[in-house]
Image (cartoon, rainbow over all chains, first blue to last red; front, side):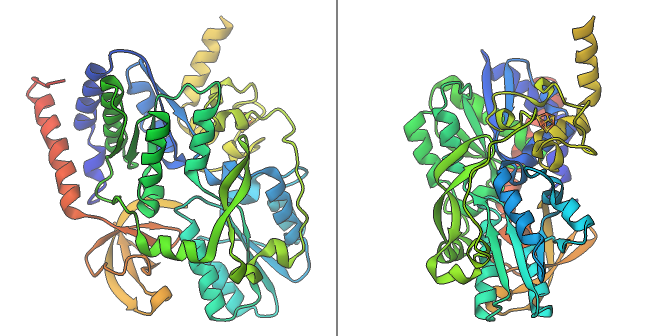
Length: 372
Length: 84
Ligand code: SF4
């Protein structure tokens, strides 16, 4: 396929790996901040092909994974109400809340539907004026404008039976938390290409200035990622951190002005709790006062409360880049995609799921060696 | 949720503001996609789509530049004199 196969060329990939190997004179730890990139890295075996000096860490770049447990409980609470249809992206249905997941609510007759876009939820609201349609709005800056469009359109059409449960989060504040952590081992970042397609990269320039850490805005195909890593290594070796854009074919400096404008019109920054990272000031998006009528939390009078993560799942540490899926004692034994204990195994963008799908044999080999 | 595959716009069906939309071909799979965020996009342009919305128009000149760079390092690899 055009603009796809060319970025998967194995000979070019080998050449790029060689370039990385020559450029890296010492160990460097690089974090990719997007679940899509995590999957591409594992699927194409890049983690194993890279020189050992390059350590890849997976960041909090999966929106399903970072949604905290109390948000899932709130979605469940809404789904159990009569006269309501709760719509969500498929993976959210299987993420465990504090006691159960949305799928079990659905199995018991609760109205829970999977949608591909919030526009599908909007269409449902048009067709079912006697029912309340609630969209569980998760996602980063890539999804927020899309959610904003749904709310804006609902307001334009006076669809007062549509609302969103906003769990949307912003990437740069989370990166800042990782950089501020005492245990931070990250030397450079691959910034998520599609987040930056919306936002552009001035926020990242600020991060470089404050933390002297390089960022390379990177695409999703194997060659994109390898080139992104190469560009990061070059900056690290030269000691000249900056923001570089590997994904020029999609990302412009100012991002997408239309999408940003709408996002700013409908949403404002709020404090938000992340799974694994805790409460991060100004890291979420909530509805502006003009659009408060579309806020499901308000509409259904949901309470604010905090819940502690319980159980043996260490996804919080994985999302901070402090542990990898193989470090989890439950990985592939008590926790599998069929019977997941945590969000990072449920989500198609989660790190545990990526390791399970693409690196299980590698894990079994390591485990065998450990036991011998 | 994130369809990172670029698709080609094959028709513009609705031109109205927030509901501007068209059909986009992803290597044989055709989907109706909202085009409100890419007002500059026309037929035959490649777009990146996320949750039913085109979020960026692929810049074919920039793509060609990256591909030329890839071709260059590939030639070096094939001729065995990779500059590393
Ligand atoms: S393997 Fe399962 S239990 Fe372990 S961190 Fe991943 S999701 Fe949690």
